[in-house]
Length: 414
Image 1 (cartoon, rainbow, N blue to C red):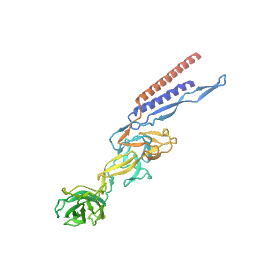
Image 2: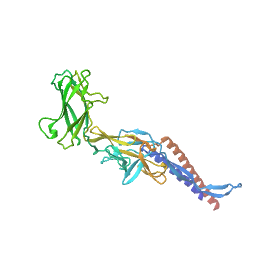
Image 3: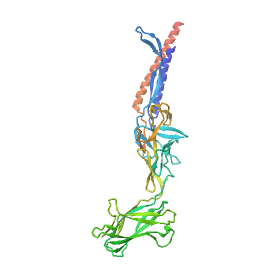
Image 4: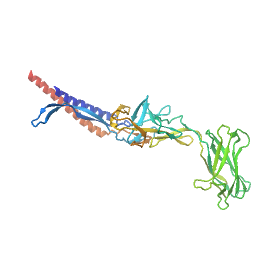
């Protein structure tokens, strides 16, 4: 009897629905997992003529699965404190690649492989925009994001320096201040220690001398003098009168390490534009000294900003962009194909991925050191399971009834 096909289709449909529900419950704690549900549709109708008023009389032939729908609402974002963990707040997917195949995921449970690259637990590389000298190139092709050992930042030669120094106004003529050491860096990132010495030559007048150890220029013996000059001070305020602004042209040549010649400028003013060298009746001392160079640095840590920029922290105290994690969006997320391991592949229905920066083009922002939890709701799944169970039992009862009717019919015929 064809009637058996109807409850059998119901059994199959509700069985598939229970499978979807059980899969949701099984992935209750899967990072980035999106809840899915099954939709039903009736099957082809058999036309058995028309009624007295001309209306068609049709009998349905059962039920079928019309589609599975994913709930792409955001799950709860949970802070983990692990720098490699990432979560997307809003729309979008991380772009990952393994063996030349690109897929997309909401799960940001990433780690760092032996090559220092961000990877998924399955070994797929997290893709993004590369950076050169701290500048991200969003016009370049996507590349793996490197954050681990071996990442370095080049040193920078010192070009300017500043000191906050007071010279004792009560010192005798001929007295010298304590030497002020100043660490500077050459073009190769090597450091050198300059010494600044002040000597009082008259009331409100001092000379300065900047020296460098002789060994730094390949010599021996006394330190090499690289700059000298005279400073005068206002007798009323103790502020520096001359020189004003800066002392330029402090040149250091012939460095023993082969670095390029250094051309230094001494900035004599602070951020407010007032002199940082004074002559007051207080002990001669330098309270602070700053300069704009630094040594070669190795990566010591990193963090991911809301726009996906991976900012590295280096051993020389500097920070620099290492790259920018890419985020992909799709015209129809429901058209994506689930392939396991929390990954999705595009299909004709979803359209191709539109890859860009987080926080632009409708794409969500990125939360660093965080994970997006599954958005499965336990109570909702239990309610769906009860409905599916009752539907399955009802169709099973219909099948049993049809079997009894069939047996009774056969007995009556015989």
